[in-house]
Length: 237
Image (tube, rainbow, N blue to C red; front, side, top):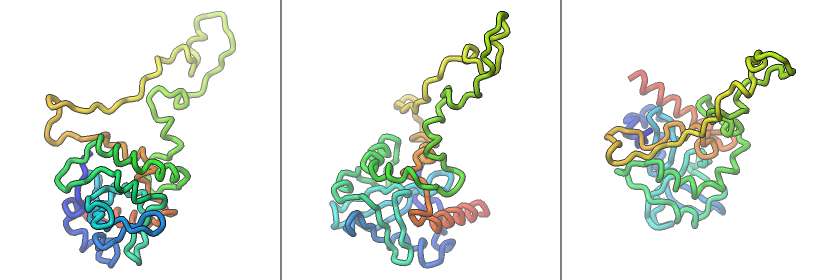
């Protein structure tokens, strides 16, 4: 699923969110652990469905002057102060983030590198109650693979019988096919990739709630409402 800059996907986002808060996303300062400023918000990246996925951070003179990405779920917003806080983030981690350029394609490999740096922080969000219905509960993620026995119907009556009908009992493991291997995302080769192809698994955001899930605990209620208002406005136009 391709990612788009906020101003490209929602050209009139300032007018739609003219409330003095999210319409001025580029004025937000970003702070890491210990109130260390690590940069300023430069942009938001949204997916094809219009959901916020990353903040683009300009690290300016605080790090190396490079732009980096922050998964939206890890950003704790202080709207009145136009600040974003990231608990547990250090300057050293920011230094190790891959650089982001406005004209680059954010593919699966790049995003895995980004998530690798933030992994310890994302793990701390496993107990959150996430907003919206597009997020898969974290406890269900491990059960979502095709063929997982935990997804199968309960076993039927396994009482011994003397005829061949005992194989027909609903849920009998003997009637089930082999457990399927988890589906893997195939990285395209130059011979198979065409312009417009999805650069990564379109469902990865809904599955990775630690990185992208919005929660009230992280003050994401207003952010979620902004997202919904923009999407509704886009549909009307």
